[in-house]
Length: 163
Image 1: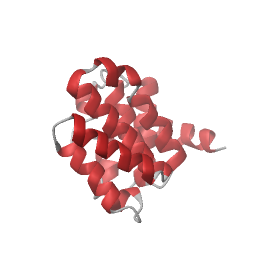
Image 2: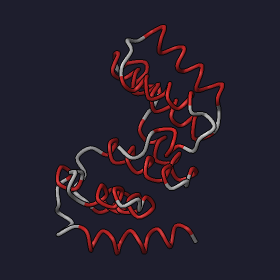
Image 3: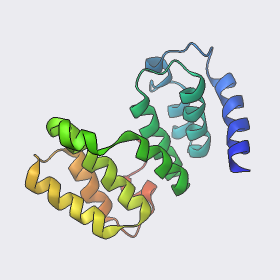
Image 4: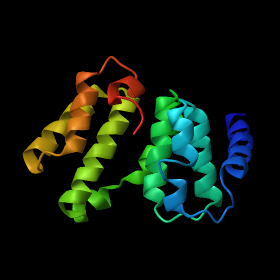
């Protein structure tokens, strides 16, 4: 049932919000368009549905970015199962093994965020520890530390709101 509702909402939003299915991702992902506008209005489910519709029907250049943002919007809406579905599409062990420092950092960040959504505090703390031992400190590590510090909050509050 949820998938049917998501499909109907996303199709309607996609046709209303984008001038054409040919809208390039840079414009779709811009701060003054589309899903980000819905997010600013705290319409997180609608924002996520629009991103999903763009993934399915749009001119996708960077699917990892779109999957990540769909996951974030679902998480902000409290739709954790859907959030995890899209977060998991953004990382894999190949990045950790062969992606250099950037690949490892992304792997840890995405996996750590998913651990927070799953309410797996042990895994989140372990990932933060590995990061500190193996990689330089960056803003994504700080984000994971913020999630751990704000453990008792929902993702939207713990992460500090939308990107």
